[in-house]
Image (cartoon, rainbow, N blue to C red; front, side, top):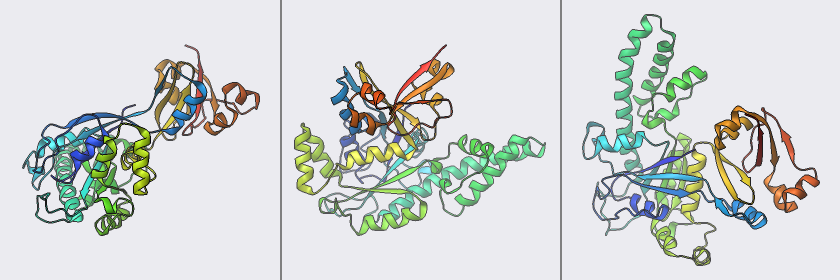
Length: 366
């Protein structure tokens, strides 16, 4: 299951620097707008210490972590919704992503120009919000005109969609994002999903701060956190320049030593990847054997047969049962055989809701 996140923001806020840290693919990092013209794409692994611990016990041929696709999208400017700058291309690239990582400049540096001449992350956030909202309104108004005619003829699906469109229209016209709206019925939820609105996508605000603010944040990031709290959105504070330094170290020990010197427990990049992964309510179950220890991605709340289908559709079709070991039990007892002997392996049926970190074997018959 692929997760695709788009890094967005105004020009010169640190998007490409952050992307460089996340991926081995190198985007330009230049002191002028639009240095990233085509979206750079990188496939990155989701950090998961559990895989390493299990590998120390199982000694597999390989470790296969979950992955996340990151897209570095060209900087947006005012008027993008009307095609200004690289507007249409920018908005099209966002539409293809599952979640948005919105980078905001929260540092002062007279050597790095700002497209609007001053540092104000709230203003910057509102510029992008407005452009995305205007594009969503354009989508809604176009769709609404057609569906109202169909609904007037008695079509039930069209009536549901009109209700959804009107709810979104009301919120967007107030200058709020579509993600602020929720729907109760499955029909409404499906209609909302099928619209693929830009501002309905989950968002993580990343405050790019200077080195001295990497641990505690600063006045700029505090303002962002206050605004995001009202939206129910998450915020992450990162010093992209520090992350660039960390990424330049080749050994794990050197990276950890550098983090210790800064008083940081974990790199901002690792925290960002984990948050991006959880942004869409994604979790991981694990298969562990001599060939490989592998992380498999699934949606939180999925039942055992659905998770079996992540490995292969035949596993879901012919699902019989799942053998489940809790990660902590595997670590405590030191082997699958010891877990079985201790009676800690559970046999689960079709209604079992898989938990994050479950180590699973699926039994099936096709």
